[in-house]
Image 1 (cartoon, rainbow, N blue to C red):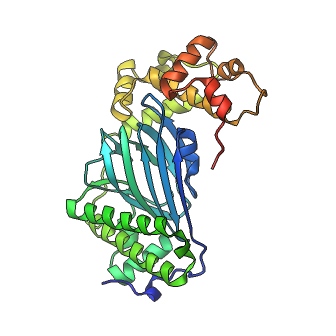
Image 2 (cartoon, rainbow, N blue to C red):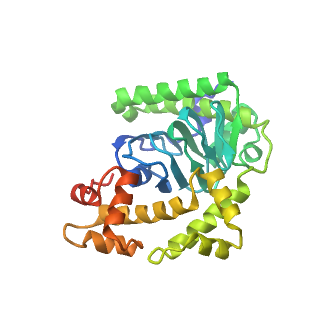
Length: 333
């Protein structure tokens, strides 16, 4: 059963917005998505390229994000919202909240929980985020679904090719239509129809999740190890801990640490220790005013005391020298 405009119960006066970005920096990619608090760490080497389209409809947010590098994401949407999505394209392994992505998977994030997403080497995803009050009203009135029960877990659930293809096609049509004519968002009838179509797309995904059951992701323990190691590294970024020191802090063996990082991120703990600090240095370079702070001081702040090695590591990961980053300092969106 399809919803009428009245059943959507969405404020017609909500100010809609549409943005589209092409980005060449993983840190700017993380900050470009409205309504989310995010941190990205690029974990595959080379110059980064990504795109982001965001369509805000008040209590509903739709976005499409593509990246050509593997990224370890930490993200938190606005309070009391539920996220659901599908991968449009993916190359390589990816893990959403501990669950391995399949070519046809429904992705979901329960309200007030943090997303931990290790993206594939190349990825393109569609995600819808919806206010839980609106979702509950719509699901129970129109779809006769128990939204509270369905949205109680996070993860990825294998779904039929038909369901995922329909989700991709419908989201693609929404973005294509708004991208071609963004001025249409100012018209009340267009917004109402757009909201109704979006809710129907989300409801189809919820119908699939109604058969999903709470589960214990196979990566849960390994992700916990990675997170604790990350906290320890960031707390000591000026005097970087060794792998042995990380193992002692976490009270685990070197083998266990290596296994956890390879399972969750596909890289070694040594590489991750370095990548975390390189991202911290890059963030400072991007925010630095001309002549305010020499590159060697920024490098030392993040535990790199050999400028030649810092430059080599930096270029290997980001595909450009620290000087190139400092000289362009791209404007934040």
